Length: 286
Image (cartoon, rainbow, N blue to C red; front, side):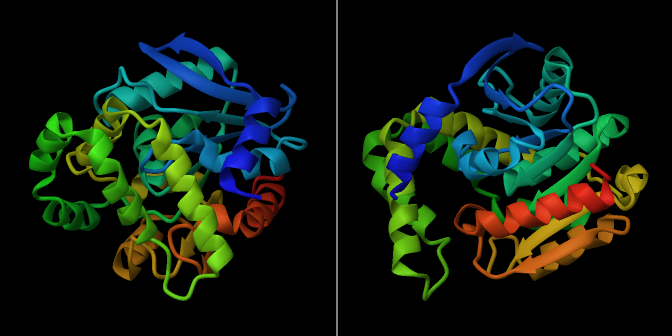
């Protein structure tokens, strides 16, 4: 099945809702019984909540699942997490487990830094720590981010899309299964077909804003000792040193190392789902 075919089935089965909360308009999917433990999925760097569609299908029988897009109204990550907190309150989600991949893993850390008493657990996937060392590395790597944002706001975005698709495909490890390559190619082409310049500028601004956040410390996660799962693939955008720094921030984390690179969150969803289930049952006693 292609990504487009899978997406069509998903959207038909799980229609999106909208809610204005905390100063933002949230486009979201909420499924699962109200008394079930809540799992909140936080999107990666393209802000596409459909990246989690396989997780919804597999976990919603046992958990209350929330997917949402980051609202355009929030211009910084601090605004975003404040808005998220009010959004979760309005939906009646108490002490959710935050499951964040890539940039979503960093947003989960920013949220925990501000609202640690309201976090039931953390699952951080293919991401780096928000510690001082990692933030310094990101500042060096993205020194020209303000110029890139300036260009992105003014460019012919439709002509830029093919280059963005090629850049995304670079996250596929060499020697990947041709079926996986074809699936991810179709995913990017489907996403970018209707992807708006304004949305790309918005999420890119949030990514650039990460570099200006106050660093987290081990104390940020102290109360979550034993309730943290790290899923870290090899050949990832967030390399070995960043992964090591992330592990160093956590208290008694459960760690799963996996092959497959940055796209493993999508392509190897079954393995991730199984590990998340084990984590919730054993560690969180859910």
